[in-house]
Length: 338
Image 1 (cartoon, one colour):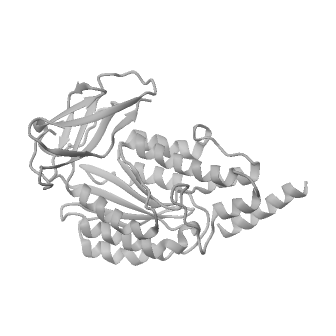
Image 2 (cartoon, rainbow, N blue to C red; image 1 turned 45 degrees about the horizontal axis):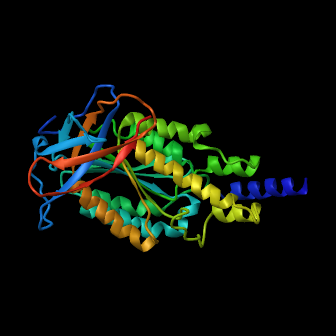
């Protein structure tokens, strides 16, 4: 009983301290389980090639050629929604994160549009869609001006951003998230019930996962402070540090970090995006700069698989140049058919 009371007391204290057309762009409207993939192309000298057409590519799934259902050339604008985690567990990293966002903005093209949102206990829109880099720069100071540092509703922020924030834009869309991936609901369940939810039974996560699957907007995570790149916090709330106190001499804190990462990976995979793990915060800025360049040199291709069976198998995607010795870089190697 004293042990249980101690956990509840610590939990209470922690909670008190703790939120596309063949040759031009168009928006695909049909309700089919299409698969999307971005690809950049370089010649043998390493120079980027930006003037290819759909007929210059061949697309295969598990070795079987697929019909390219839609195609967007490099020149097609991107609509990039930047989602910035300013919860307590990321507080000491805000200056690095702010500089990373600035690096991304500076590497987007003139035709690309940007919107910026932040989240802690709720999603807040800091800047609506614009192609003005000056306006985007003026929004940067707001990223580190949290009014309240409370709970972290990551999954709700993802769900709302995917369902609502792209309604006013057409063409290519991408959600870029800078976060440690920790949602208060998962942490609270573990502390209060001594139980770590599996993703399949986590209702808050499943809501975000369904939106990522249904909205078909590639979601990219630059994820820090995970079990793959842990850098202990020096200030602000830290769920992992708290769990080390609550569950002494236990693997539970590490299992928690593992589940946090797995959830981000599942959302990235089902949406057609990907997740990047900077080894330390110094790498975040170059990674965001790299993402900006990649978005500016990518073609977008999509298809409906000739194998409709949702059997859970991993299906490998391969894009080949129709002719010539070209080097192709894909945004994803495959997907799970679910």
